[in-house]
Length: 566
Ligand SMILES: *[C@@H]1O[C@H](CO)[C@@H](O)[C@H](O)[C@H]1NC(C)=O
Ligand SMILES: *[C@@H]1O[C@H](CO)[C@@H](O)[C@H](O)[C@H]1NC(C)=O
Ligand SMILES: *[C@@H]1O[C@H](CO)[C@@H](O)[C@H](O)[C@H]1NC(C)=O
Ligand SMILES: *[C@@H]1O[C@H](CO)[C@@H](O)[C@H](O)[C@H]1NC(C)=O
Ligand SMILES: *[C@@H]1O[C@H](CO)[C@@H](O)[C@H](O)[C@H]1NC(C)=O
Image (cartoon, rainbow, N blue to C red; front, top):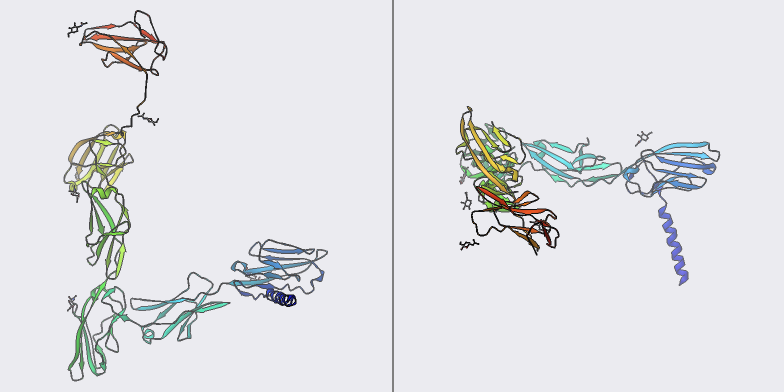
């Protein structure tokens, strides 16, 4: 048993050694190959030092006195001084220099070897582009720059100029032959699937402008037909073939062998009904009928415009004066209105949600959507307005159509915003003027309080309107804190005289003048060792009390005169 195992082991290890011996590097290599650049130096017995260096990178492999130094993984030096790549990569491309020295340090050989590493060619695909009557085939292989393109028709090479595009004449297209392309580099090659270009696809009813297509003649057996006529009803364009001859050719319009009608490139005016009639040699009508096509231009990219009315906002989807387009409205990617209405009304509640809106316009063959916009909504400024809110002072002037110049000025600060000939001038950020001349605060501040004066002038500089609007901005009331305080109360006893006003003083300075005969002091407010007095006065006389000095927060006191306090 054990004997069999060791034999098997020997066999396997011998095999493994055999396959790790790398082949000799060709100049052109496929990425991932393992190979060796042989050192050309004949007899390396006398060599004491061998150095390989890659000129386009810092990679070096160096052996001296049997010791190896290297700075790049995957690169090794063989016993005989050859350079081995475990697996070449694109960045290994380039020239490698070798230098060999003997024990005395004399150079006994030197030289250079080049390798070029390539990635596998990808399988290309052929794309067809038919526009305005020209058919172009494009060989698509991504962004690679190391590949050469060739073109084939029925497997025969027809173009080898490294051009990814192949232009086909209508004659070539009509042959209905398969085309393919290949891409290659020195180490690999891939060919696309073949495609057959049929000159013209069958016209759909709805067509994009510029499409090339054919309206098939529905008549089955046209062998007996002697005369075929197509008429465009709305233009009276006609194409007519009799006895094999086309009469009155119309540019861009051709009749196929089988009587079908081909447009090189449909345009909007080609829309409409086409009637066909087929006659035999005797002039008898064999078949007749009608086909309709509708040609559309590409949808343009629409833009959303906002119109802020009192309270509500209207969004308008602007796409010029095209009449073939259907409008839809979206809020955060969900469709919310599909009634083909270019306007979307937002209530103030909706506007205040600050959501993204966009519209799309489409016709049966194309669709475009606008950029998304956020409706930021501004309410009308109240006379008393909370700090930090956004609001608008409406310009009271009714018909601003004739206005050429509008100014708003804050009387207490001189802040202004000025609109003239469509140009805005202002001296303060956060103020904007609306389309209709209204004044908008992005976020009102306490200092925005006050009166704002507006003036409106017409083209001739005549003042049409002027006036003032006032706002008062308040900060949000703070949450009061309830705390426990021990207070000292001083009373200014004036009997029951109701016609006397009481004032309070400390150290001769007035501290309360609310006519109240009591003064409340928290222990923190007490001015220690200072004399407190009160006065009682009426319009014609005044009398001051004796003073009292408060000493301790405990409320103990000393009185110069007779007052006592416990
Ligand atoms: C390598 O060297 C050869 C000959 O010296 C030169 O023609 C070639 O351009 C070099 N290649 C690179 C990648 O520098
Ligand atoms: C084409 O013909 C159909 C059916 O006869 C008709 O409904 C349609 O309106 C016509 N189209 C035009 C553009 O005249
Ligand atoms: C705003 O829209 C609501 C709901 O559509 C309507 O009831 C209200 O009258 C509108 N307000 C204004 C000022 O148009
Ligand atoms: C109430 O107390 C809190 C916490 O000390 C403080 O941040 C706040 O400003 C106080 N409110 C007022 C009205 O002083
Ligand atoms: C206070 O006024 C009342 C009448 O309003 C009177 O009866 C009383 O005597 C007065 N007291 C003093 C101390 O003057």
